[in-house]
Image (cartoon, rainbow, N blue to C red; front, side, top):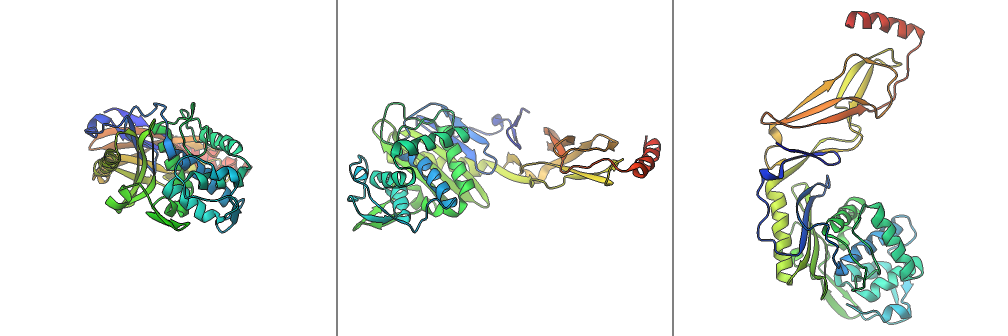
Length: 371
């Protein structure tokens, strides 16, 4: 069995599962939300026009400002003249209109409204160009290596591109960092400025487990989607780029999500800082030291197989102070039905200094007999 190691997650060889079939879009990817591990992909690093999926990054930056109290959802702002001249989908704002940040965010995420988007970014950063610089900084921080934004709306422009894998990273970051704001991404309709607008993400109507995130379309990009769904405590994110129609985008997004839920279980075996094993410590200011993982440890296995996973902790003995937090202390060996999944390093969860003279002397005697 081939073993994959990504962050704190192990995965059996992809050959253990049949790849999802019948996905004809230009590029796509499916990931597990909790671990970030990729479950299936096709041309996932191909830079493509992202259309209004761009606004997921616009939203990410704006939600960060709201979290830091730089903006407030209840704050009312004035629509600038430049925003009313935007191309693309609109909610027909007029220069000088007073609209809340909350309503503008809804208009951007339900309707992909360029006039609402530009009002938001100009409020946040003074100009679209300044805001786009922030978008690109966040893209780099999140590891979106195939992404470069030229605008905040997603309108076609030379050099404006992203990839399926990068957009999955972004979708995961939104769900992880702003769980209390996910309602913006699952909203089906919006009544504003005397009109009712409906979300083009058909999965919100077809599958009650879908929680967003966004769809988009331009002539160059085709039909695009970043979809998130949660079933039974598990969450998957699917990205579809370059579909030929709304129906294809919807069907293939749902097919990827179903594949992810029907074939895999993502199980949190240990919490960050949770002791996996505690061992005796010699010559230390305390008599034991705990070992575990500094981050949550997830295991990805065939669906229904988690109860058959066996764990063995291998430690070096004796353990002698001083011990530094984060230093390698042992190994967690995981097997499934007797086959090795992998060996994963266990580290000290805390520092332990050297004991005083009396403590060291007594432990020297203990060590003599322990050996």
